[in-house]
Length: 296
Image (cartoon, rainbow, N blue to C red; front, side, top):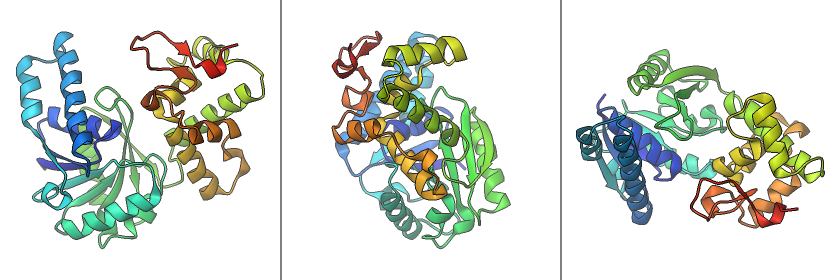
């Protein structure tokens, strides 16, 4: 397997494309937006440049990685002659089902179709294709080039052969693949996202402020990043979407999103991607600056 397509040029998609290309795979990065593709290539180039500056890779490695990458706005052209397609579009069920239907129609029957979904049922996604045995979850962690974990999620019909192929492939990328079963949120987000939601509830109830909550979790629990800073980094819209998937999937009120989270998403305060969430991100420094909304 040497030719891979990645659908979606956002944060996760460009990180996945970067990782495959750096590992020697030919990668077709696909998005309906040329602007998103240009931004993704610029991000990959900048991140590779940082790695060169830190002497983690050579200039030749950087050039080879970029040479392995091509961009496409036409999905049919982008998935021609690949052995694997990794979907990394927005965490929206209807959109993912639409993409998988189109991927199924556009690729030959032996191509493996993977999704980077962080919570949606692999079995449900596989059901809209004619090859449910070749549909699998590859849930990468952000930032993809740095984080070692890939959650490998088998759908109800995913074959042993496809699972083993993707486990081996993940190792070729320098990752640690971990197989989990197909339940809402899988393992990572089933544990992480309710913790983030509880931190937002704690803030909303006035128990403590943003900085205090994050400080307790960093210094008391050894977390490298507090839950509210992490929520900003993940994207508050993504956190909300995962909570909704888990609440629908389990029917358990413990997964109900905090009203503050819902309001922030409605107001467009999504965290790093929008420039503001619990913290302000438009200042261009690494300093943590509270959003005006949460200053005392």
